[in-house]
Length: 176
Image 1: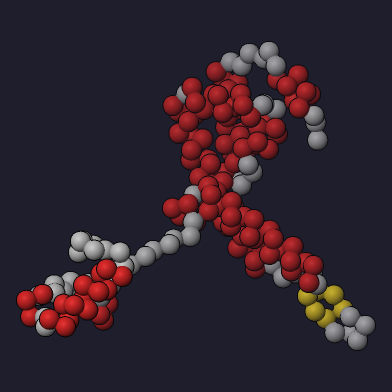
Image 2 (image 1 turned 60 degrees about the vertical axis):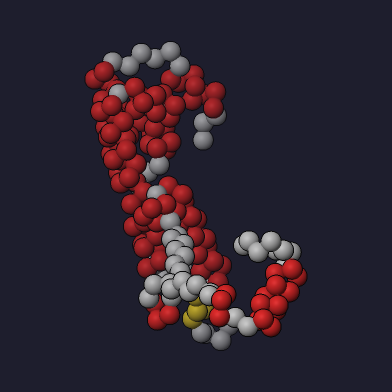
């Protein structure tokens, strides 16, 4: 893999015409739509990622195309997860002649799937993120009912118990 200095030297000082920018951008977008990350796509196209991203920020048209290509790349990562999951791991035959899955291969597949799932949850949390929903419901799944306590109907003993509990909780003035 080339060093950073070689990459900078290769693209430093180049002036790109609008036609060249469009050709390079189309190549990068095409690769991204096939699931290749932006950095690798830019490297293959022979341009620094920072230069390319600068173009997408300067041009609304390229920015929109980049957003579409990035979304397509994310969805292709999801497709890749299915491919990895559906592929049988390597099998080994033990000394007794029994064929079984290689545990290291299974763990490697799991790591590949989990890392892609994590990445998807960060790149598109609304689509691929975990949804934590907290819902408060009343009896039988219905609405919560709020009951008011009528203190007029309490006996003196019940009122004394309530006052004792409120003092014990540190709520002397009766406010919640």
